[in-house]
Length: 246
Length: 257
Ligand SMILES: Nc1ncnc2c1ncn2[C@@H]1O[C@H](COP(=O)(O)OP(=O)(O)O)[C@@H](O)[C@H]1O
Ligand SMILES: [Mg+2]
Image (cartoon, helix red, strand yellow):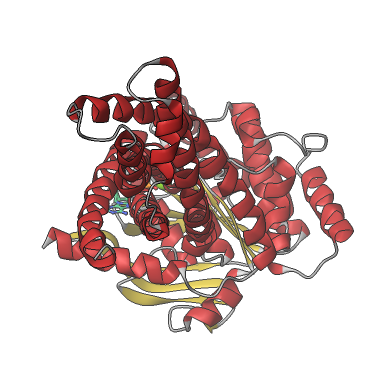
C-alpha cells in the first residue's frame, strides 16, 4: 500500500515536472547551474575511482588468466569490456546516486522546509518544473559524458599498471583494448546511463520535494533518496541488460 | 478586501481550522493572533491556496478563489505578495536576483526597468547596497526586509506575512511591523499578518482576529483588546507579567475614578 502511494505521488510529481515551462530563459540559467553542480563537480570523484578500478581490474584479470595458453592481450579485452559493460555505467551510476542523489534531495528538502518551494508556488511558478526539470536535463546530458570519461580514465589506469608491472606489455594491452570491439557495447553503456540519470534524479528529487518537518527529516530523506534510487537503478540494470543486450 | 467564509481544514482526522469566517479590510493591517500551534499558518496558507480547504470559500475582492480553475488562480496569485516566517529567500540567488525574480518570471520589462524596480523595492525597505550578497550573508532582520522587497516587487493587491518578527530583537521587530503597516497604507493593499507578539498587536493592529485551537474566538481592534471579556483572549493577552501588571494598574485606576 505504501508503495502504491509513493508510486502515485511520484507519477503526479513527474507530470508536474513536464508541464509546459513558463519562461524558458529562466530555465536556461538553472540548467547551467545544475550542469556545474551535478556534472562538473562530479568529475573528480569519477576520475579517482575509475583510475583505481581500471588498475585493479587489470591486475585481477591477469591473476585469473594464469594459463600460458591464453594470449596476454586478453587482459586488455577483459578490462575494456568490464569497464564498458558494468563499471563505467552501473558502478559509476551507483557512485553518482550517492553524490548527486543526496545533494538533490537535501537541496530540495531544505527548500521545502524553509518554505522556498511555497514561495515559488505562491508566485504562481510551477515549482516542480522550475526546480526539477533543469536537474533532469543536465544529468541526462552529463552522466553519459562521465561514463566516457570513466572509460578513458579506467583504461589509462590499466595501461599504467601494464607499464609498471609485468602483467602484460603495454603494446599487448593496447592491442587488447582494440581487439574485436563492438561499438554496440558503447552505445549500450551510454543508453543505460541516460536511463540511470533519469532514475537517480527523479527519485532523489521526489524525496527532497516531499520532505516535511525538521532539518533532521531532510537528512533522512536524503538517505532514502540514495537507497531508493540505487535499488531501482539496479533493478533497471537487470531489465535493461536483458532488454538491450541481446 | 478578502472574505473568508466558513472554511474548515483538517489533516487526516485532525481538525485544524473549524468553520472560520473573517473579513479582512483593504488598506488596513489585519492581524491574526493566537498562540503557537493554534492554526495561524494553516489559515494563512489556506487563504492563499497553498493548502486546499475542505469546506468554505475565499473571495478576493468578490472573486471566488476556491471555485476558480488552476489558470484563473494563477492569475490572481500574481496579485499576491507573501513574506514567510523565515523569509524563504532563494539560497542560490543574490539579494538582487531574489527581488528581481518575480519580475523575470512574470513581466516583459527590459533589464534596465527590472533593475530600477528592484532598486526601488530594496530602497523602500532600507536595504540598498546589499544587492550582490547572498541570503546566507544577511541577518534575520535583513532577510525579512529583503523578503518584503520581493513580496512588493509586482505591486501586489494583497500582502501576507507569517510571523514577520519572530526571531528578531524587539527593536528590529517593531521596525519590520512599521514597514509592513506603512506599505499597506501607502499602496492601499489588503494585508494579513500572523503574529503571537502583543507588541505588534498594540503597534499595528488595525483589525485583530484571535484564533484559539482552530476556532475564531474574538475579533475587534487593538483598542478593545485590553478590555475584552473573553477568557481565552485574556489568557493570551495577559500571559506576560508586564501585561498583567499594566492590567492591575488600570483596574486600580478604574476603581479609584
Ligand atoms: N502539513 C501539515 N500536516 C499535518 N498537520 C499540520 C500540518 N501543518 C500544520 N499542522 C498542524 O496544524 C496545527 C496548527 O499549526 P500552525 O498553523 O502551524 O500553527 P501556528 O499558529 O503556530 O502557525 C498544528 O497542530 C500542526 O501540527
Ligand atoms: Mg506559524
